[in-house]
Image: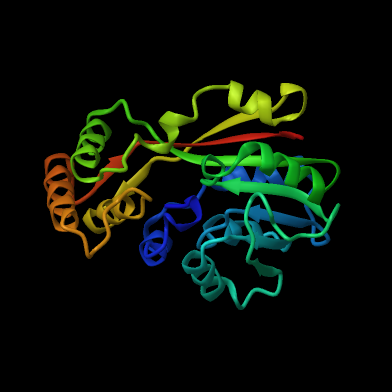
Length: 251
């Protein structure tokens, strides 16, 4: 299955249950990169528009580039009333955006799906001179009992599971190779997520590796997640330990 197809059929649950990002991150972006109403941001791999929506709150113009039709249409439904939103049928490696037209490139929860060499080349083409690329992830802290057991459930019922995305992004060589001269700013923002049962299950179902409804593993996966939630919940919620990390530099 192509990377661009891995979230087909998951747009609804993704839009409903994927977490947002801390306000402190956006405050940093707006001030650090002097964003204004005249700025144009390309949000690459924009999915259902979770990160795009937060960018739009500042009044900047956002071109949301997403190759998966289900995810792109979900963003269009969510953000169609915003005049500064433009939905773009494109990919990280071929955005279709004009040369030297973008003030800032963002990629939230998406870079690990890209071809980094081709994406870097595309960023160099669409960005104005000496502008920045910012890569963002929500990282589950997987060393606590809840997340260790959550990972074990995923291994049992999700054949494509290879670990949570944060565990695959710990090698700084990846970012040194991507950013110009190997220089980048790495920031971390606390962002723990209190989840009720439906949100806990939904967060797991939104993953690319999670089974779809028409598969044999789907109901077994939900049963195991429900049992896990019951063991760890306090007053009807579990706390999913999470941090938001960003990596920013020129290319």
